[in-house]
Image (cartoon, rainbow, N blue to C red; front, side, top):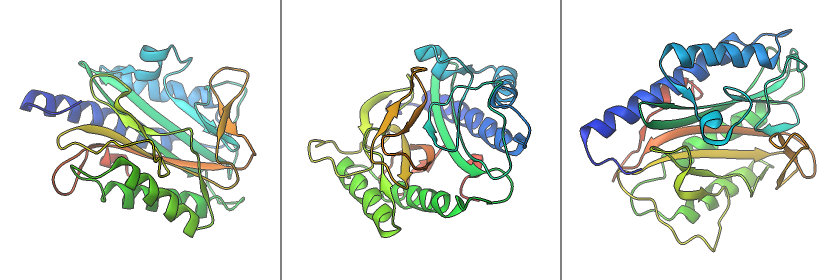
Length: 254
């Protein structure tokens, strides 16, 4: 969406505060021995208390309040009583919601407890690259140039990017124009970022794979060549200078 008045600005800010708060609380609530279903229900209760609805459920019929992916699951993991969190797990939580007609989106990958399996380096790379990407965006910048930046920074650190998962426009719907904000230089993408528009910028930084494929449940995605992935996401408003990071209170950069 494009921000055209104060009412729209207030609406997208409130929706963004809800998803950022929920993500931060879910990350802090996660403990070894807890099921991903329990974690999701905790997040769902927070959203309901704030008058928000789950965006993936409302938009696509996703079977959960939030997407929770564990270890080799890249994204869109379905909350389940059969998936029990363990010390050292690589966890990704993606929270998107609708509040009073406005949608916002954010995500975080983190290690649960001690970094037993050495995931933190991958996570730090994803967070750092997201920061560099977001603060390189302003009105008129080519979308493909940000993709090139993300891929170049990932390669510097010895990682790959997932080419079939992208950021996107957001605001009045969960997914809006621009439909795709890739993590690589897509030469077919001639689009530019527009001042006052709202977008969700995401990094998909991988150890092994460059494509993600969907499992038999129709939702959960893993790497086509295996490995692990870290994803971090903020919803922002593009300006002529520094962007407004609407979901900054989720604390993923802290």
